[in-house]
Image (cartoon, rainbow, N blue to C red; front, side):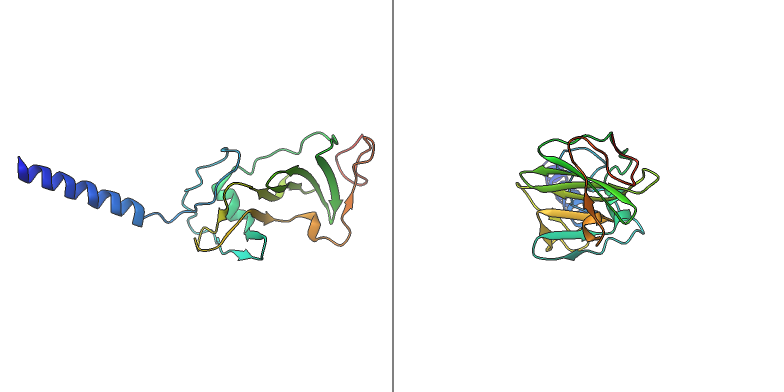
Length: 166
């Protein structure tokens, strides 16, 4: 009986250590709790990170491996905390949150091509280097990097040259 207990404890410790050491996926999280399992294996997709003093940037394919990127472009509406932007063939919705601007960008076909998530409670972690952590996570194409980006939330009118609008 004593030997069984020691074996059981040893096996439990080995399984626990193997589980922790074997985590190869991302620890990035979805602030709304939705999307795919944040610890999903990224497989052969590159998840190399870039960072600056405020944001962590990962490839869009990597982001979509860990989160649901099947977000349809919503109907146009402006509120005090949400605005639309167009530029470089993209239409983006920006929602101001306590954690920073949340941005979703779609191409002219309505496909999600870029996203920015913000958090004011815990940082996003680079999937390939857990030492890199920031409170803003960016992936894909966003119109704020476009010299021709134009805000277009004006008394319910639509964005010129986009699929959204009044």
